[in-house]
Amino acid sequence: MSLKVVPQAIEIRNNKIEFDNLLFFIVDSNSSVKIEPLIGYDAIIIDSKDAEFAKLILKKIRGHYNPEFYLKPVFLINYKESKDPILHSLNDGFIHSYDQLKEIADVAKQIFLKTTQLDYQLVATFEAQMMKKVLNFMFTRDLKTLKPIPDLNSVIGYTYPAISVNFDSSEETQVLEILEWGEREGLVWPDFHERIYLCNQCSGGFLSYREVCPHCNSSNSSAQDLVHHFPCAYIGPLSDFQNNVDNALTCPKCNKALRHIGVDYDKPSIIHHCNNCDKNFQDFFVKAKCISCTQDVEVQYLIPKAINVYKLTKRGRTAASNGFLSTGKEVEDIFGTLTMAVFKTMLHYEIERIKENPEQQKSSIVIVNIENIFELYKKVGKKAEKTILESIVNLIRENVRPTDFIAFENSSTMYLGLINSDALQSEATLENLKTLIEKLIKNNFNDFSANINFKVKLLQPFNKSEFQLQELTKDLFD
Ligand SMILES: [Zn+2]
Ligand SMILES: [Zn+2]
Ligand SMILES: [Zn+2]
Image 1 (cartoon, rainbow, N blue to C red):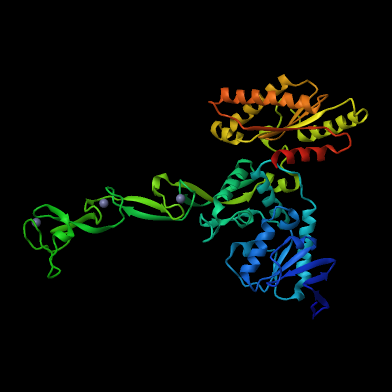
Image 2: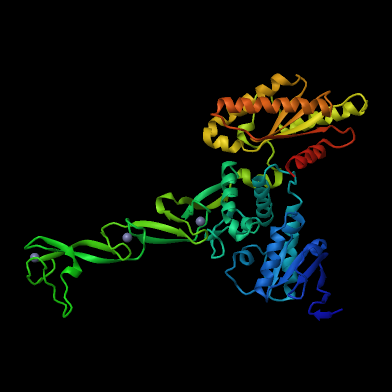
Protein backbone atom coordinates (compact mmCIF):
# COMPACT_ATOMS: atom_id res chain seq x y z
CA MET A 1 0.00 0.00 0.00
CA SER A 2 1.56 3.27 -1.09
CA LEU A 3 0.36 6.59 0.14
CA LYS A 4 1.60 9.77 -1.40
CA VAL A 5 0.23 13.22 -0.69
CA VAL A 6 0.56 15.90 -3.32
CA PRO A 7 -0.50 19.57 -3.06
CA GLN A 8 -4.18 20.59 -2.96
CA ALA A 9 -4.94 17.49 -0.95
CA ILE A 10 -4.94 15.19 -3.96
CA GLU A 11 -4.36 11.75 -2.61
CA ILE A 12 -2.98 8.93 -4.69
CA ARG A 13 -3.75 5.58 -3.15
CA ASN A 14 -2.77 2.42 -5.03
CA ASN A 15 -2.65 4.43 -8.25
CA LYS A 16 -6.19 5.69 -7.71
CA ILE A 17 -7.31 9.29 -7.36
CA GLU A 18 -10.76 10.47 -6.40
CA PHE A 19 -11.34 13.98 -7.63
CA ASP A 20 -14.40 16.02 -8.48
CA ASN A 21 -16.66 12.94 -8.28
CA LEU A 22 -14.46 11.14 -10.79
CA LEU A 23 -12.35 8.08 -10.19
CA PHE A 24 -9.00 8.24 -12.00
CA PHE A 25 -6.56 5.40 -12.38
CA ILE A 26 -2.88 5.99 -13.07
CA VAL A 27 -1.29 3.39 -15.33
CA ASP A 28 2.48 3.34 -15.00
CA SER A 29 5.16 0.95 -16.16
CA ASN A 30 4.63 -1.16 -13.03
CA SER A 31 0.98 -1.68 -13.95
CA SER A 32 -0.40 -4.72 -15.68
CA VAL A 33 -0.69 -4.56 -19.47
CA LYS A 34 -4.20 -5.99 -19.14
CA ILE A 35 -6.72 -3.20 -19.61
CA GLU A 36 -9.87 -5.10 -18.58
CA PRO A 37 -9.57 -4.08 -14.89
CA LEU A 38 -9.72 -0.42 -15.98
CA ILE A 39 -13.38 -0.65 -16.93
CA GLY A 40 -14.63 0.68 -13.59
CA TYR A 41 -12.69 3.94 -13.74
CA ASP A 42 -14.00 7.22 -15.13
CA ALA A 43 -10.72 8.26 -16.64
CA ILE A 44 -7.20 6.92 -17.09
CA ILE A 45 -3.92 8.76 -16.70
CA ILE A 46 -1.02 7.02 -18.40
CA ASP A 47 2.47 7.76 -17.16
CA SER A 48 4.34 8.20 -20.44
CA LYS A 49 7.89 8.16 -19.09
CA ASP A 50 8.14 4.89 -20.97
CA ALA A 51 6.63 5.96 -24.31
CA GLU A 52 6.49 2.42 -25.72
CA PHE A 53 4.52 1.20 -22.74
CA ALA A 54 2.19 4.19 -22.88
CA LYS A 55 1.58 3.55 -26.57
CA LEU A 56 0.81 -0.11 -25.93
CA ILE A 57 -1.82 0.73 -23.31
CA LEU A 58 -3.38 3.53 -25.35
CA LYS A 59 -3.56 1.28 -28.43
CA LYS A 60 -5.29 -1.41 -26.40
CA ILE A 61 -7.85 1.03 -25.04
CA ARG A 62 -8.64 2.78 -28.33
CA GLY A 63 -8.50 -0.47 -30.31
CA HIS A 64 -11.00 -2.22 -28.04
CA TYR A 65 -14.40 -3.05 -29.54
CA ASN A 66 -16.30 -2.01 -26.40
CA PRO A 67 -17.22 1.70 -26.18
CA GLU A 68 -16.64 1.52 -22.41
CA PHE A 69 -12.98 1.26 -23.32
CA TYR A 70 -12.44 2.98 -26.61
CA LEU A 71 -14.37 6.12 -25.58
CA LYS A 72 -12.75 6.34 -22.13
CA PRO A 73 -11.04 9.66 -21.39
CA VAL A 74 -7.30 9.00 -21.39
CA PHE A 75 -4.70 11.55 -20.35
CA LEU A 76 -0.94 11.48 -20.38
CA ILE A 77 1.48 12.62 -17.70
CA ASN A 78 5.23 12.96 -18.21
CA TYR A 79 4.54 13.07 -21.93
CA LYS A 80 7.39 14.16 -24.15
CA GLU A 81 6.15 15.52 -27.48
CA SER A 82 6.38 12.53 -29.75
CA LYS A 83 5.88 11.83 -33.41
CA ASP A 84 4.11 8.57 -32.69
CA PRO A 85 0.67 8.93 -34.33
CA ILE A 86 -1.17 6.94 -31.68
CA LEU A 87 0.27 8.67 -28.64
CA HIS A 88 0.06 12.01 -30.34
CA SER A 89 -3.45 11.81 -31.79
CA LEU A 90 -5.46 9.58 -29.50
CA ASN A 91 -4.94 11.12 -26.06
CA ASP A 92 -7.44 13.52 -24.51
CA GLY A 93 -4.84 15.90 -23.16
CA PHE A 94 -1.75 15.86 -21.02
CA ILE A 95 -0.70 17.23 -17.68
CA HIS A 96 2.67 18.02 -16.16
CA SER A 97 1.60 17.50 -12.57
CA TYR A 98 -1.42 16.31 -10.62
CA ASP A 99 -2.13 19.96 -9.75
CA GLN A 100 -3.76 20.15 -13.18
CA LEU A 101 -6.33 17.48 -12.33
CA LYS A 102 -9.14 20.04 -12.45
CA GLU A 103 -8.48 20.74 -16.14
CA ILE A 104 -8.63 17.14 -17.24
CA ALA A 105 -11.59 16.40 -14.97
CA ASP A 106 -13.51 19.02 -16.93
CA VAL A 107 -12.47 17.44 -20.23
CA ALA A 108 -13.53 14.00 -18.97
CA LYS A 109 -16.94 15.34 -18.00
CA GLN A 110 -17.39 16.92 -21.43
CA ILE A 111 -16.65 13.56 -23.03
CA PHE A 112 -19.15 11.79 -20.73
CA LEU A 113 -21.84 14.24 -21.67
CA LYS A 114 -21.23 13.53 -25.35
CA THR A 115 -21.22 9.76 -24.81
CA THR A 116 -24.74 9.90 -23.44
CA GLN A 117 -25.92 11.31 -26.78
CA LEU A 118 -24.58 8.40 -28.82
CA ASP A 119 -26.69 5.84 -30.58
CA TYR A 120 -25.64 2.28 -29.75
CA GLN A 121 -27.73 0.48 -32.32
CA LEU A 122 -25.92 -2.53 -33.70
CA VAL A 123 -24.88 -2.02 -37.28
CA ALA A 124 -24.69 -4.57 -39.98
CA THR A 125 -21.40 -4.90 -41.76
CA PHE A 126 -17.81 -4.84 -40.59
CA GLU A 127 -17.23 -1.59 -42.46
CA ALA A 128 -20.26 -0.02 -40.85
CA GLN A 129 -19.17 -1.15 -37.39
CA MET A 130 -15.69 0.29 -37.87
CA MET A 131 -16.99 3.53 -39.27
CA LYS A 132 -19.52 3.85 -36.46
CA LYS A 133 -16.76 3.36 -33.94
CA VAL A 134 -14.68 6.10 -35.55
CA LEU A 135 -17.69 8.42 -35.78
CA ASN A 136 -18.44 7.83 -32.10
CA PHE A 137 -14.87 8.69 -31.17
CA MET A 138 -14.87 11.81 -33.33
CA PHE A 139 -18.25 12.95 -32.02
CA THR A 140 -17.23 12.67 -28.39
CA ARG A 141 -13.96 14.54 -29.09
CA ASP A 142 -15.40 17.19 -31.43
CA LEU A 143 -13.15 16.06 -34.27
CA LYS A 144 -14.22 17.12 -37.77
CA THR A 145 -11.57 15.60 -40.03
CA LEU A 146 -9.51 12.44 -40.40
CA LYS A 147 -6.03 13.42 -41.50
CA PRO A 148 -3.45 11.04 -42.94
CA ILE A 149 -0.15 11.09 -41.03
CA PRO A 150 3.10 9.86 -42.62
CA ASP A 151 4.12 6.78 -40.68
CA LEU A 152 7.11 4.52 -41.17
CA ASN A 153 5.35 1.70 -39.33
CA SER A 154 2.45 1.55 -41.76
CA VAL A 155 2.79 -0.69 -44.84
CA ILE A 156 1.35 2.07 -46.98
CA GLY A 157 3.41 4.83 -45.38
CA TYR A 158 0.39 6.67 -43.98
CA THR A 159 -1.88 6.16 -41.04
CA TYR A 160 -5.26 7.50 -39.88
CA PRO A 161 -4.80 6.94 -36.12
CA ALA A 162 -8.49 6.89 -35.12
CA ILE A 163 -9.16 4.02 -37.56
CA SER A 164 -5.70 2.51 -37.85
CA VAL A 165 -5.58 1.79 -34.12
CA ASN A 166 -8.03 -1.03 -34.84
CA PHE A 167 -5.66 -2.76 -37.24
CA ASP A 168 -2.15 -4.12 -37.34
CA SER A 169 0.23 -1.90 -39.26
CA SER A 170 0.35 -4.63 -41.94
CA GLU A 171 -3.40 -4.28 -42.45
CA GLU A 172 -3.34 -0.56 -43.16
CA THR A 173 -4.87 -1.00 -46.63
CA GLN A 174 -8.06 -2.15 -44.92
CA VAL A 175 -8.23 1.30 -43.36
CA LEU A 176 -8.43 2.77 -46.87
CA GLU A 177 -11.27 0.35 -47.68
CA ILE A 178 -13.22 1.45 -44.61
CA LEU A 179 -12.78 5.09 -45.63
CA GLU A 180 -13.87 4.33 -49.20
CA TRP A 181 -16.96 2.67 -47.79
CA GLY A 182 -17.66 5.72 -45.61
CA GLU A 183 -17.27 7.89 -48.69
CA ARG A 184 -19.75 5.75 -50.69
CA GLU A 185 -22.21 5.98 -47.80
CA GLY A 186 -21.86 9.74 -47.74
CA LEU A 187 -20.45 9.83 -44.20
CA VAL A 188 -17.12 11.40 -45.08
CA TRP A 189 -16.01 13.65 -47.89
CA PRO A 190 -12.54 13.28 -49.46
CA ASP A 191 -10.13 16.14 -50.07
CA PHE A 192 -7.23 14.96 -52.19
CA HIS A 193 -3.94 15.02 -50.31
CA GLU A 194 -1.52 12.64 -52.04
CA ARG A 195 -1.36 9.64 -54.33
CA ILE A 196 0.37 6.41 -53.40
CA TYR A 197 1.04 3.23 -55.35
CA LEU A 198 0.60 -0.24 -53.98
CA CYS A 199 1.83 -3.69 -54.96
CA ASN A 200 -0.80 -5.47 -57.08
CA GLN A 201 -0.12 -8.77 -55.31
CA CYS A 202 -0.10 -7.89 -51.61
CA SER A 203 -1.16 -4.21 -51.48
CA GLY A 204 2.14 -3.36 -49.81
CA GLY A 205 3.38 0.18 -50.19
CA PHE A 206 7.11 -0.35 -49.58
CA LEU A 207 8.33 -0.41 -53.13
CA SER A 208 11.82 -0.09 -54.48
CA TYR A 209 11.76 1.64 -57.85
CA ARG A 210 14.53 0.80 -60.30
CA GLU A 211 15.45 1.53 -63.88
CA VAL A 212 15.94 -1.83 -65.54
CA CYS A 213 17.28 -3.12 -68.86
CA PRO A 214 14.43 -3.70 -71.34
CA HIS A 215 16.15 -6.88 -72.57
CA CYS A 216 16.93 -8.75 -69.36
CA ASN A 217 15.28 -6.73 -66.50
CA SER A 218 18.57 -6.28 -64.72
CA SER A 219 19.11 -3.05 -62.82
CA ASN A 220 22.85 -3.44 -63.20
CA SER A 221 23.44 -0.84 -65.86
CA SER A 222 25.49 2.27 -66.36
CA ALA A 223 24.71 5.39 -68.33
CA GLN A 224 26.90 7.53 -70.49
CA ASP A 225 26.50 10.48 -72.81
CA LEU A 226 25.97 9.90 -76.48
CA VAL A 227 28.31 12.05 -78.59
CA HIS A 228 27.59 13.32 -82.08
CA HIS A 229 30.61 14.50 -84.09
CA PHE A 230 29.34 17.05 -86.65
CA PRO A 231 32.12 16.97 -89.31
CA CYS A 232 31.79 13.22 -89.98
CA ALA A 233 28.30 12.64 -88.46
CA TYR A 234 29.52 9.79 -86.23
CA ILE A 235 27.36 9.07 -83.21
CA GLY A 236 28.54 6.86 -80.37
CA PRO A 237 28.91 6.61 -76.60
CA LEU A 238 31.40 8.95 -74.94
CA SER A 239 33.76 6.05 -74.18
CA ASP A 240 34.37 5.61 -77.94
CA PHE A 241 35.95 9.10 -77.93
CA GLN A 242 38.04 8.70 -74.76
CA ASN A 243 41.60 7.45 -74.32
CA ASN A 244 43.52 6.05 -71.35
CA VAL A 245 46.06 8.82 -71.15
CA ASP A 246 44.37 12.21 -70.93
CA ASN A 247 41.01 13.97 -71.04
CA ALA A 248 41.18 14.76 -74.75
CA LEU A 249 38.38 13.41 -76.94
CA THR A 250 39.11 12.03 -80.37
CA CYS A 251 36.62 10.86 -82.95
CA PRO A 252 37.05 7.11 -83.60
CA LYS A 253 35.80 7.52 -87.17
CA CYS A 254 37.71 10.51 -88.57
CA ASN A 255 40.44 10.73 -85.90
CA LYS A 256 39.95 14.48 -85.43
CA ALA A 257 40.20 15.99 -81.98
CA LEU A 258 36.93 17.28 -80.57
CA ARG A 259 37.09 20.97 -79.64
CA HIS A 260 34.01 22.76 -78.35
CA ILE A 261 30.65 21.31 -77.42
CA GLY A 262 27.95 22.98 -79.48
CA VAL A 263 30.50 23.97 -82.17
CA ASP A 264 31.90 20.76 -83.62
CA TYR A 265 30.13 18.16 -81.49
CA ASP A 266 27.06 17.70 -79.36
CA LYS A 267 25.68 15.37 -76.64
CA PRO A 268 22.16 14.65 -77.94
CA SER A 269 21.15 12.14 -75.28
CA ILE A 270 22.18 9.42 -72.87
CA ILE A 271 22.80 5.78 -73.66
CA HIS A 272 22.58 2.95 -71.17
CA HIS A 273 24.72 -0.11 -71.05
CA CYS A 274 23.51 -3.27 -69.34
CA ASN A 275 26.30 -4.91 -67.38
CA ASN A 276 24.30 -8.11 -67.22
CA CYS A 277 23.46 -8.82 -70.89
CA ASP A 278 25.93 -6.35 -72.42
CA LYS A 279 23.30 -4.66 -74.61
CA ASN A 280 22.99 -0.90 -75.14
CA PHE A 281 19.64 0.79 -74.94
CA GLN A 282 18.19 4.27 -74.87
CA ASP A 283 15.04 3.92 -72.77
CA PHE A 284 14.85 1.74 -69.69
CA PHE A 285 11.81 0.21 -68.03
CA VAL A 286 10.85 1.37 -64.56
CA LYS A 287 9.92 -1.46 -62.23
CA ALA A 288 8.91 -1.50 -58.60
CA LYS A 289 10.04 -4.33 -56.39
CA CYS A 290 7.73 -4.93 -53.45
CA ILE A 291 9.75 -5.24 -50.25
CA SER A 292 6.94 -7.23 -48.60
CA CYS A 293 6.35 -10.00 -51.16
CA THR A 294 9.40 -9.45 -53.47
CA GLN A 295 7.15 -9.30 -56.54
CA ASP A 296 8.68 -7.14 -59.28
CA VAL A 297 5.92 -5.09 -60.90
CA GLU A 298 6.01 -2.85 -63.94
CA VAL A 299 4.94 0.54 -62.65
CA GLN A 300 1.88 0.82 -64.89
CA TYR A 301 0.42 -2.21 -63.10
CA LEU A 302 0.77 -0.82 -59.59
CA ILE A 303 -2.48 0.08 -57.83
CA PRO A 304 -2.84 3.84 -57.44
CA LYS A 305 -4.68 4.98 -54.31
CA ALA A 306 -5.61 8.47 -53.25
CA ILE A 307 -4.66 9.46 -49.74
CA ASN A 308 -7.33 11.95 -48.75
CA VAL A 309 -8.09 14.20 -45.86
CA TYR A 310 -11.59 13.08 -44.91
CA LYS A 311 -14.10 15.60 -43.65
CA LEU A 312 -17.23 14.55 -41.83
CA THR A 313 -20.36 15.24 -43.83
CA LYS A 314 -23.58 16.33 -42.20
CA ARG A 315 -24.72 12.74 -42.44
CA GLY A 316 -21.49 11.57 -40.83
CA ARG A 317 -21.88 14.05 -37.98
CA THR A 318 -25.41 12.93 -37.21
CA ALA A 319 -24.67 9.21 -37.66
CA ALA A 320 -22.87 9.13 -34.30
CA SER A 321 -25.94 10.30 -32.40
CA ASN A 322 -28.71 9.01 -34.68
CA GLY A 323 -27.21 5.80 -36.02
CA PHE A 324 -27.17 4.72 -39.63
CA LEU A 325 -30.80 3.69 -39.81
CA SER A 326 -32.85 4.64 -42.85
CA THR A 327 -30.72 7.64 -43.64
CA GLY A 328 -29.55 6.27 -47.01
CA LYS A 329 -31.07 8.16 -49.92
CA GLU A 330 -31.24 4.99 -52.01
CA VAL A 331 -33.54 3.22 -49.55
CA GLU A 332 -35.89 6.15 -49.07
CA ASP A 333 -39.42 5.84 -50.47
CA ILE A 334 -39.11 2.54 -52.23
CA PHE A 335 -42.67 1.56 -53.04
CA GLY A 336 -43.95 -1.22 -50.82
CA THR A 337 -41.59 -0.56 -47.89
CA LEU A 338 -41.81 1.29 -44.58
CA THR A 339 -39.18 3.43 -42.92
CA MET A 340 -37.44 1.78 -39.98
CA ALA A 341 -39.29 4.05 -37.57
CA VAL A 342 -42.72 3.00 -38.88
CA PHE A 343 -41.56 -0.62 -39.03
CA LYS A 344 -40.74 -0.51 -35.31
CA THR A 345 -44.10 1.05 -34.49
CA MET A 346 -45.90 -1.66 -36.46
CA LEU A 347 -43.90 -4.32 -34.62
CA HIS A 348 -44.87 -2.71 -31.35
CA TYR A 349 -48.60 -3.07 -32.21
CA GLU A 350 -48.06 -6.61 -33.41
CA ILE A 351 -46.44 -7.49 -30.07
CA GLU A 352 -49.46 -6.02 -28.28
CA ARG A 353 -51.73 -8.14 -30.47
CA ILE A 354 -49.96 -11.47 -29.89
CA LYS A 355 -49.77 -10.76 -26.18
CA GLU A 356 -53.52 -11.36 -26.00
CA ASN A 357 -53.16 -14.92 -27.19
CA PRO A 358 -49.52 -15.96 -27.36
CA GLU A 359 -50.35 -19.64 -27.86
CA GLN A 360 -52.42 -19.10 -30.98
CA GLN A 361 -51.01 -15.98 -32.58
CA LYS A 362 -47.49 -16.31 -33.84
CA SER A 363 -45.60 -13.85 -36.01
CA SER A 364 -41.97 -13.68 -37.09
CA ILE A 365 -39.33 -11.09 -37.74
CA VAL A 366 -36.67 -11.64 -40.37
CA ILE A 367 -33.43 -9.95 -41.31
CA VAL A 368 -32.09 -10.35 -44.84
CA ASN A 369 -28.63 -9.27 -45.84
CA ILE A 370 -27.08 -9.39 -49.28
CA GLU A 371 -23.48 -9.53 -48.30
CA ASN A 372 -21.81 -8.72 -51.61
CA ILE A 373 -24.39 -6.37 -53.10
CA PHE A 374 -21.97 -3.43 -52.94
CA GLU A 375 -19.89 -5.20 -55.58
CA LEU A 376 -22.93 -5.20 -57.80
CA TYR A 377 -23.66 -1.54 -57.03
CA LYS A 378 -20.10 -0.72 -57.98
CA LYS A 379 -20.61 -2.41 -61.36
CA VAL A 380 -23.99 -0.97 -62.21
CA GLY A 381 -23.50 2.48 -60.73
CA LYS A 382 -25.24 4.48 -58.06
CA LYS A 383 -28.32 5.21 -60.18
CA ALA A 384 -29.24 1.58 -60.80
CA GLU A 385 -29.05 0.86 -57.06
CA LYS A 386 -32.63 1.90 -56.42
CA THR A 387 -33.93 -0.09 -59.40
CA ILE A 388 -32.30 -3.23 -58.02
CA LEU A 389 -33.83 -2.67 -54.60
CA GLU A 390 -37.25 -1.95 -56.12
CA SER A 391 -37.27 -5.16 -58.12
CA ILE A 392 -36.25 -7.14 -55.02
CA VAL A 393 -39.10 -5.56 -53.06
CA ASN A 394 -41.57 -6.36 -55.86
CA LEU A 395 -40.47 -9.94 -55.83
CA ILE A 396 -40.85 -10.22 -52.06
CA ARG A 397 -44.26 -8.54 -52.17
CA GLU A 398 -45.48 -11.12 -54.68
CA ASN A 399 -44.49 -13.91 -52.30
CA VAL A 400 -45.68 -12.64 -48.92
CA ARG A 401 -49.08 -11.61 -47.61
CA PRO A 402 -50.44 -8.06 -47.99
CA THR A 403 -50.37 -7.71 -44.19
CA ASP A 404 -46.63 -8.42 -43.98
CA PHE A 405 -44.24 -5.50 -43.90
CA ILE A 406 -40.78 -4.67 -45.19
CA ALA A 407 -38.21 -2.00 -44.26
CA PHE A 408 -34.66 -1.31 -45.37
CA GLU A 409 -32.00 -0.65 -42.82
CA ASN A 410 -29.54 0.25 -45.55
CA SER A 411 -28.96 -0.73 -49.15
CA SER A 412 -27.75 -4.21 -48.23
CA THR A 413 -29.97 -5.11 -45.28
CA MET A 414 -33.72 -5.29 -44.81
CA TYR A 415 -36.19 -6.44 -42.20
CA LEU A 416 -39.47 -8.27 -42.72
CA GLY A 417 -42.40 -8.66 -40.37
CA LEU A 418 -44.32 -11.83 -41.25
CA ILE A 419 -47.71 -11.77 -39.58
CA ASN A 420 -49.42 -15.02 -38.53
CA SER A 421 -46.44 -17.01 -39.64
CA ASP A 422 -44.53 -19.14 -37.15
CA ALA A 423 -40.78 -19.69 -37.28
CA LEU A 424 -41.06 -22.84 -39.37
CA GLN A 425 -43.36 -21.30 -41.98
CA SER A 426 -41.23 -18.14 -42.11
CA GLU A 427 -38.07 -20.18 -42.55
CA ALA A 428 -39.68 -21.89 -45.57
CA THR A 429 -40.89 -18.56 -47.02
CA LEU A 430 -37.37 -17.16 -46.71
CA GLU A 431 -35.64 -20.18 -48.27
CA ASN A 432 -37.94 -19.72 -51.23
CA LEU A 433 -37.37 -15.94 -51.37
CA LYS A 434 -33.63 -16.41 -51.18
CA THR A 435 -33.68 -18.66 -54.26
CA LEU A 436 -35.92 -16.23 -56.14
CA ILE A 437 -33.80 -13.16 -55.35
CA GLU A 438 -30.61 -15.01 -56.31
CA LYS A 439 -32.21 -16.00 -59.61
CA LEU A 440 -33.47 -12.45 -60.24
CA ILE A 441 -30.02 -10.96 -59.74
CA LYS A 442 -28.29 -13.69 -61.70
CA ASN A 443 -30.60 -13.30 -64.70
CA ASN A 444 -30.51 -9.53 -64.80
CA PHE A 445 -26.90 -8.82 -63.96
CA ASN A 446 -24.68 -10.94 -66.04
CA ASP A 447 -24.58 -14.05 -63.85
CA PHE A 448 -23.73 -12.10 -60.70
CA SER A 449 -24.17 -14.47 -57.79
CA ALA A 450 -25.48 -12.76 -54.70
CA ASN A 451 -24.59 -13.97 -51.21
CA ILE A 452 -27.85 -13.82 -49.33
CA ASN A 453 -28.09 -14.52 -45.62
CA PHE A 454 -31.16 -14.37 -43.45
CA LYS A 455 -32.24 -15.05 -39.92
CA VAL A 456 -35.75 -15.73 -38.67
CA LYS A 457 -36.98 -15.24 -35.10
CA LEU A 458 -40.39 -15.72 -33.56
CA LEU A 459 -41.71 -12.40 -32.26
CA GLN A 460 -41.67 -12.51 -28.45
CA PRO A 461 -44.76 -11.18 -26.67
CA PHE A 462 -42.96 -9.67 -23.68
CA ASN A 463 -39.89 -8.11 -25.17
CA LYS A 464 -39.40 -4.67 -26.73
CA SER A 465 -39.36 -4.59 -30.53
CA GLU A 466 -36.16 -2.53 -30.52
CA PHE A 467 -34.39 -5.19 -28.50
CA GLN A 468 -35.69 -8.08 -30.58
CA LEU A 469 -34.41 -6.44 -33.78
CA GLN A 470 -31.02 -5.91 -32.18
CA GLU A 471 -30.81 -9.56 -31.20
CA LEU A 472 -31.79 -10.62 -34.68
CA THR A 473 -29.12 -8.43 -36.22
CA LYS A 474 -26.54 -9.68 -33.78
CA ASP A 475 -27.43 -13.30 -34.57
CA LEU A 476 -26.96 -12.78 -38.27
CA PHE A 477 -23.68 -10.92 -38.13
CA ASP A 478 -21.96 -12.67 -35.23
ZN1 LIG B 1 20.28 -6.51 -69.87
ZN1 LIG C 1 34.50 12.32 -86.73
ZN1 LIG D 1 3.80 -7.18 -52.66
